[in-house]
Image (cartoon, rainbow over all chains, first blue to last red):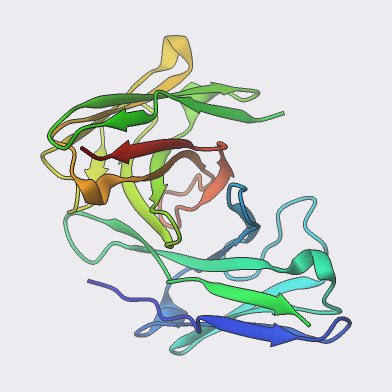
Length: 110
Length: 122
C-alpha cells in the first residue's frame, strides 16, 4: 500500500517561512492535498491539486510537488497557523482505491 | 453555506453496533460523492469509506471491510455509516466529508462535518 511520510513536528518563528514535507514513492505523479487541523476542530482543506488554494485560504499558503516530495509552504507565519497539517493522496493502484493520509505534522510557532 | 452535521455516536460495547448519520445542507447533495474519515484519540486521520453520488460505487478501508456499510439517501440529503462487530480500535471521532473533485481522478475532502465520537469499551 502507498505510504506518505511527514515529519512529526516543525517549529518556526513568527514572520518566518515554514515548510512541511510529505514524502512518497514518485508522489510527483499524484495529486496532493493538504489539511489544517486545529485542536478540537475538524480538518480544513488548505491546498488541493498540489498547489491550488480554496477560497478563504490566505495566499501565504502554497504547495508544490515533484519527484518523491510534496511541500506545503506557509509564508509569514502567524500564531494562528499553529496546528496539525496532513497531506493526502488517492492511491488508485489496485482494484480497491484508497485515500491515504500522511501521519501529520505539528506546526509550532515559537 | 455548506453544512455537514454528524450524529449517532456514543458508547458501545465490543461486538456491538452503531449507525452514524450525516445531514447535509447548502449544496446539491445528490451531485457529490461522500466519505467517512475517522480519527482515533491523539492520532492522525484515517479514511474509512467512500460512496459515489448515485451509490453505484462504494469503497472501504481494509480495517472496516465486512463490518461497516456506507449508504446514502439523496431524497433526505443524508449519509449513513452502519458499524457492526465494533472493536476497541474503532474508537474515534468520525467525520463525514464531501468529495471536492469532479474529475474522479483526484478526490479530496473539501468540506468536513464537526465529527461524532464513537467509543467502543466494555
